[in-house]
Structure formats: C-alpha cells, structure tokens
Length: 119
Image (cartoon, rainbow, N blue to C red; front, top):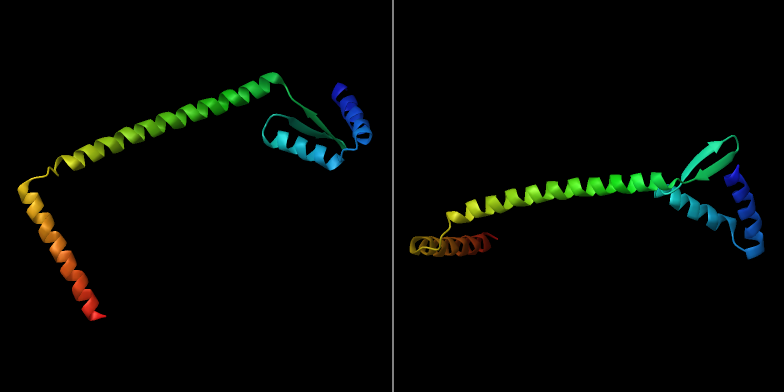
C-alpha cells in the first residue's frame, strides 16, 4: 500500500514540479531493465518495488559471472602463451633458417612478378 501511495504522491508532485510523466516512466523502465527495480502488473496498475537484498544478490551474481569469465580467459591466455612458446621453439634464428627465408622471399617475389605478367 505504501508504494501505491508513493505513486499517487509522485503523480501529484509531477504537476507541481512541471515534469513530464513520460520521463518518469522512462526512468522507471530503465531501472526495471537494469534489474534495480521489480515491476508487477496487478489488475490495471503497475506496482514497482525494490528490495536492497535483491539488488545485492543481482550484483553478487554479476560479480561471480565476471570472475568466472576472467578465469576462463586467464586459462585461454595461458594455453595460447604455451602454444606460442611451442611454435617459436622450432624457429631459432639459425644460418640455415636465414637462407631458407631468403629463398622464400625470392620465390614470393618471382611469383608476384609472374602473376603481374599474366595480367
């Protein structure tokens, strides 16, 4: 009953403060969308309420979800770091590798030149 009286008081205050009722509805809807306020349609009226514990539980749930996501990303990052280390271990900069890389660059340049001739 207290929330209903609060809405009546709010409606009367809107007229005194020259506020648009639609802006109040928009703010209420954004609070509902954010999960900070609960709405229930009873008959032809909408009742809004919020319990401090509900907001706290919602925030705890979001925090736990973020922690889980963080742990998942940390694990994925560690796996990728290990893959990078494993892949780079066979790529020590040796003389043979430098010669092969030079040949590869020459072959790629020759390939580009031949592709240009075909056009």
